[in-house]
Amino acid sequence: MAVRDPVQAYVGLGANLGDPVATLRRALTDLQALPGLGLLRVSAWYGSAPVDATGPDYVNAVAEISTTLSAPALLAALLHQEQRAGRERPYPNAPRTLDLDLLLFGAGRICSAALTVPHPRMWARAFVLVPLAQLRPDLVPDACLAAVRSQVIWRVGPPGPTSMDVINTQAG
Ligand code: AMP
View 1 (cartoon, protein in one colour):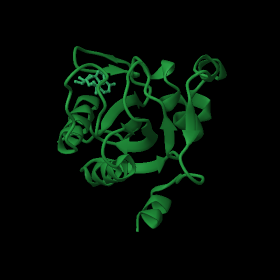
View 2 (cartoon, rainbow, N blue to C red):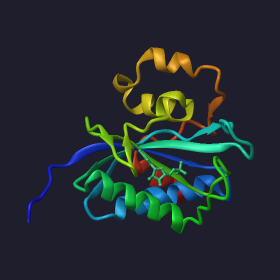
View 3 (tube, protein in one colour):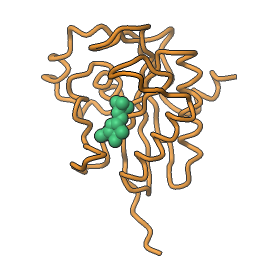
């Protein structure tokens, strides 16, 4: 059986219902448990006001992963995790227990009915660009950060975790 070379990918995480930090921690643990997926680094936790929506503030982060899964298989795994976290879609941009977006998949560009990569709305969202820039400033042009400067985003609590080791330490 052919084995793929690992691809470095970036996943956006967000939640604004229930206990968002606990849900994001669980999602990271579950991601790391997937066969063919390794969690490399995680940004700090950020708080953000809903964009084009109402409801409680979000907690957001971006995870850097290495995976031998295909992009569609990775998306399927992310959607499965959202379902397990009780995600419902009663209307567009509804509050959510867990939102997982495939932001970047190596240098891949994908345009299919079910999947667009890079994520089509990531460049317009401070809650994606700021944590992504924390991990990979080279991937986020200054002009893109400047364009979302009016969106409110803040670090949640003390300086956030930057690696799984720190997350695991703090989870106790
Ligand atoms: P949402 O309601 O924002 O979580 O959108 C989820 C839907 O967007 C899924 O059914 C996917 O098929 C589709 N989608 C397209 N591109 C992406 C992407 N890069 N990451 C996550 N979902 C995507």
